[in-house]
Amino acid sequence: MGTTVSKKLGNLKFRRQQPIGAHIVDFVTFQHKLVIELDGGHHNQDSVVTRDAQRTADLEAAGYRVLRFWNHDVLANLASVLDVIEGAITARMKSPSPYPLPSRERE
Image 1 (tube, rainbow, N blue to C red):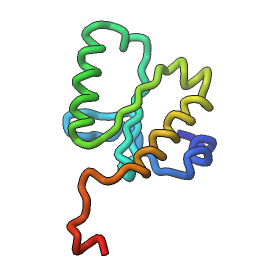
Image 2: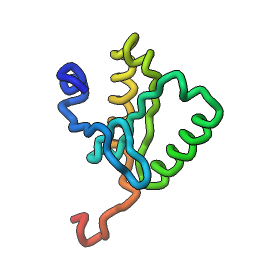
Image 3: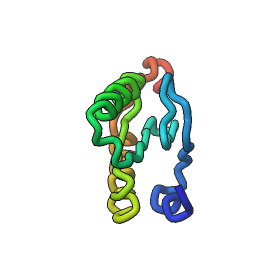
Image 4: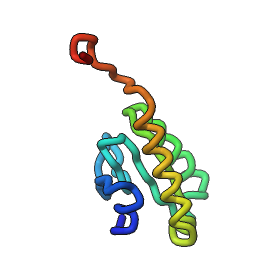
């Protein structure tokens, strides 16, 4: 994700082609546990749709939020894609952690 993306998303660090469990994701920010997957046309095939659904379920079970975008949408409407990503990060920052600190560590 280039300079424009960095500026738009507050210079968040995304890593590309990172392994998470049995999967290699397109982009991930570990800080916000957000995975971005970019899908080409072959993701419309039934077998790939099924595999993608399992992949998403696995990643979500590991605590990640998964956003999928069509390659065409990224190329044709990057600003909207970035808005969706920014919204997802903002929502994750506002939601309480599923792993709260013990009460003695919260003080």
